[in-house]
Length: 114
Image 1: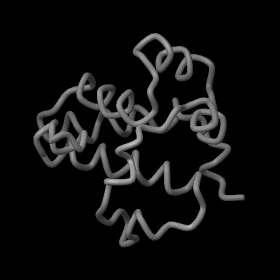
Image 2: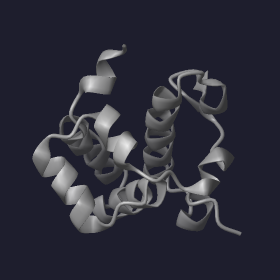
Image 3: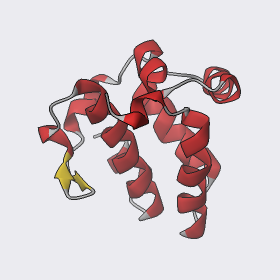
């Protein structure tokens, strides 16, 4: 088991927000992509952050967006669609979406909308 699985999402979340903000983007944009990927609304996301939910439990509770399979690209030199462990793949999806926010990609592209 990889240690990120037992890491609290709330321990990583500030880094996601800081990454976006350094590039002129907002916490709201980060929240939007998390909510899109997981199906959580804002209060549910905030509850998971407040409760110290681990990535393992966070994604176990999530209803992954059906368009998540359209997420392609690399994160840390690894192609997300080639990650074999399903939980690690979901975490990498999230990492890639946050990277796309930070790079200024248009939200409709990030959210894989037509």
